[in-house]
Length: 461
Image (cartoon, rainbow, N blue to C red; front, side, top):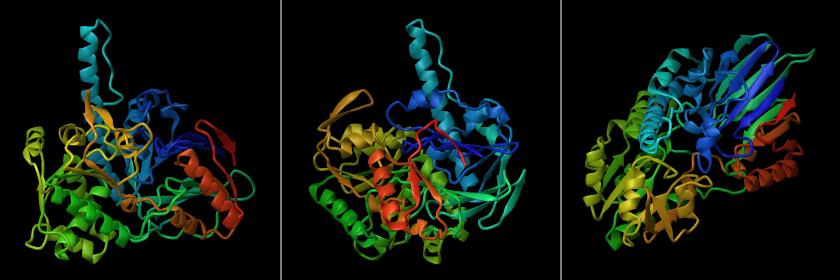
């Protein structure tokens, strides 16, 4: 087998792995790049002809793992896309939303170019490209072994990251002995809200491709994380401001709604108004409601008793006009808006109008990639450019990484502890410091051979 690390190996976004085995050509993930230089990276030609790809495996719905699927379709991919039912349900609103953004951005750039006498701009992909993708899905449950043909078989196991997320076990026989490679996808941490814990992988593999997003650090225990969250909210309200939370529409937003409801029910917060200013997050929440089989009884009750006297007052914000009206709210409210790294979405407008207000608070509850607006704020910038306007950073900035849906270093190492062979481990999906530290910990604890491949590198396994 030839394994090419197309993207997401030496970076945290743009995951894509190209497998050539026997007569099959396969992708695992087809993710979009995010952060500095991402537009150019997403426009690069694929290092393969999408027309020749037989199938694509997706571990979960996040855009950095799935966002270039419509582009592959645009360039001729017509194979099958294997994933779990919940992942497919999440992908429909996510990829249609992404396609709308691509079209809108291209239209805006085209108008600007025409005024300057330049040629029009073609979108990365269109809504029609995304819609052409959906008939190609082939949905598979967790835990069942399937044969792909040509000496290849596979199985999804629950990764506990977001709804429908999976790790992928992949067996292939290109010589006398069958071999196995496992793709971790993004591994969730124990006791993530709503969804089940990661399923321990079976204890054999020749090769493992594992993420390292938090490979150099631990998350705070959830109790301490929630205490910090409550403190950030209360201190902001005491100053007379609003709380703004940039949040990923899928996974993190649903967790926050769940946690805020519990805090009100426990009496730790009063019955506050929470505005979910993300049509995509609303659609994703409805997908979560559709799949109660993937979470526990407590979470199931949450989504059926959202509006009670002992819960938050949750408001879904639909139109751009309704979103703009939120800037008239001066204090005592929580506004959750996309995107999670402040790259696009409605959060930019809220920060433009409120980041300079010292009485307000901004709570970051997820990873901020290098080059993103969120990362600049987290790293202590005194002012930032938002939508073409320089805005002072005077609001209190809180970074609470304990809400991350990714396992921390100990969780990643525990996941690897299930392998009783001595696999070769490819460490991907992490910044250099995170991946390097994680590789050292793997070698110290287990003695596994590790390496950090570069984007574009090909290995024979």
